[in-house]
Each structure stands twice: as structure tokens, then as C-alpha cells.
Image 1 (cartoon, chains in turn brown, blue):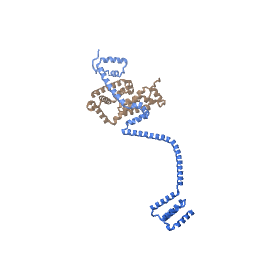
Image 2 (cartoon, one colour):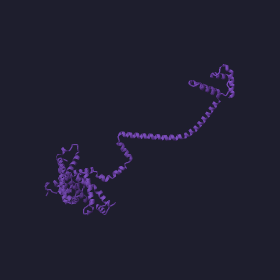
Image 3 (cartoon, one colour):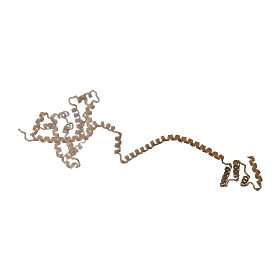
Image 4 (cartoon, chains in turn red, green):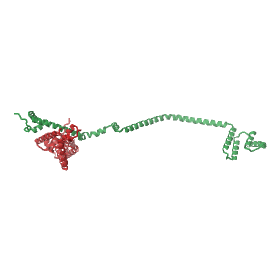
Length: 189
Length: 241
């Protein structure tokens, strides 16, 4: 049985000029990075773009990787930054649309039974409610939830990615889950 | 001393969340597990947070299934290959499944027509191969036919040659007379010429007296007074000949 090549070894090969080495990194992590981006941004196209930009930025800054953190953490950090940058750009471009969206979300939480059509399945309603609730969270809380639920990163890994203390990560995740719980209870899901 | 039920007082939020996600160490997990059995607040919080996690997981699973990113990374490369591996028979089958009824009928008719034409062509080739030996026999029978024809022609010529001359001469003059009757415009010189030409050429035997007289009467050349002249004339004609 061949030994599994670690990400760090692959990065070392990429740094020595191996053209296929970074492709191996992409193949290993593209799905998880996409899941993270999708959880953060909520749209497939934007998640694709963010994923591509993440690996592009990683390739450009490959020599800056010093091996102090894990490659996965490093990639996740880049992905989170890309997603946050995208969200800020979108917020600057359409401030009014974001407010309208927040109002819609709030209205949905207040009286969901009156707004949603009757034909929508109950399970689908619940999922939609969760989606709205997650995207109604502040960015710093949302990214912790997404990294934990979509990527299944440990608290330590999230702390490394976000460069936060471990307790802060736990506290943010707890706060995020409590807010989601309150929103979903109001929604009735 | 047991802790009173007070959700605000019990501020082990981080332990709850770590316990919820299974990130407490073994010793810490046993300690908190013991605590939550005696803390309704923690027990209630854990239930609520667990229900919220399930909701998030449902949304996550649906989101990742609907996105096609995984297919592009894993199966997209295989899809063209699989499509490429589709056999022509499968493509034809899918074509007929998707095509309308009239197109199916037209295709079936075209196939049937092609089969019929192919069968006719094959049968034509086989028939042609059988015709080839008969061509030889036909050539053989053609030669025989020609020989038979030549024989018959020769026999007919001999028969015609053996026929009496006067019959042929009289028949010829009668024929000319009937022809003249149908053509009244023909002048008498032609008639005389025809009769005169016909009689000496066909005649191989000298005319008898009666024949000479009849001929002259027909031609209205002589009267009764010229009998002797006719006889002399006949002798002269025979002598000249």
C-alpha cells in the first residue's frame, strides 16, 4: 500500500517546480473549499468564482507558505477572506438591495405561514428557513457556522484560519447557534 | 451541593458547544456529562442546539447535492467518456424514443423499401447468372435458326423457280391491268409497254394461234382480216426470240 502523500510534501514538490503538484492540492481540496464558499455566499456561481480565486491566490502566494500551519488551514483562510471580500463588494454595490433582503428575511421570520405558498413541502420550508436564518447572521458568526458545519473543521483549525483564540471561536459558534434557534422558532420550523 | 436550575447562572456555554461537537477530551467529556444530568438548563440547551444542528445539516446536504461542483470535479471527466462510450445502438434507440410518430413511420418505411430494393437487386443478379448459359444455347439456336431460315429460303426459291412461266406472266399482266384500272390517268403507252414487256420476257414457249389472237384482240391491234398477218407475226416473233 502506497503511503499517503501529505499536503506539505505536495507543496514542497510544487515549490521545486513540479507542475502537477499543485494540481493535486486543488484536486484534494476543491470540493471542501467550494462547500465553504457556498455556505458563506449561498450562490453556486459566486462560490465557484470564490473557489477559483482561492486556489489562484494560493498558487500565487505558494512561496509565502512557510509550513507553520496546515495546508488545509491556509487554504481555508484564503477562502474565507475571498468570501468576505466578495460580500463587502456586494454590500457596497447594492446597499439598498441588502436592506430589502434583510427586511424580507425579517418579514419571513415574523409571519412565515402567510408568506410562503401552501404547496411548498414542509421539509423544504424548513430548509429554506434555515438558509434564510444563516444568511441573516452577521458575517463573523456565519463563517464560523459554515466552517464548522460545511467543512467540519475543528475549533482549533477554525481558530487557525481566522486567527482567533479558541474560546472566541467557541463563543461565536454558540452565539450563532442560539440566534439560529431563535429565528427558526419564530419561523415555526 | 447541587446546582439550582438557573440557565443564566450556568454559564458553561463553551463546554456545551464543545460537548455538542465532541471536541472535549475524555476526562472533560465525562465531567460535563455528569454535570448535564444534574443541570436541566444544560440538558435543555443541548437538546435545542442539537435540533438546530440537524436543521443546518439538512440545509447543507441539500445545498451540496444540488450544486454541480462535485460532478465537475469527479464525474464530469467521466461523463464525456461515458457519453463517448454510448454505443451507436443506444444512440439509435434514444433517437427513436424521442422522435415523433411520423418520423418513426418514415424511418421504418425507408428501411423496408431499402430491404425490398436490396432483395430485388440480389434476385436480379441471381437471375442474370442463370441467364448466361442460356445465352449460349440461344446463340446455338440462333445459328440453327439462321440455317433453317436459309434452307427454307432456298427451298422457296427453288419452288418459285420450278413454277410454270405462263402462270407467272399472266398473273403479272392481270396484276398490271388491275393496277391500270385503279389508275385511269395512266396513258395507253404505259399499258402497252407493260403488257409488251411482260409477255416476251415471261414467255418461254411460243404462243399458240389462239393466244396470239387473244392478245391482239386485247390490244385492239388487229381485226379479223389480219389472221394471216398475225400468224406470220407470231412466227416472226418466235424466230426473233
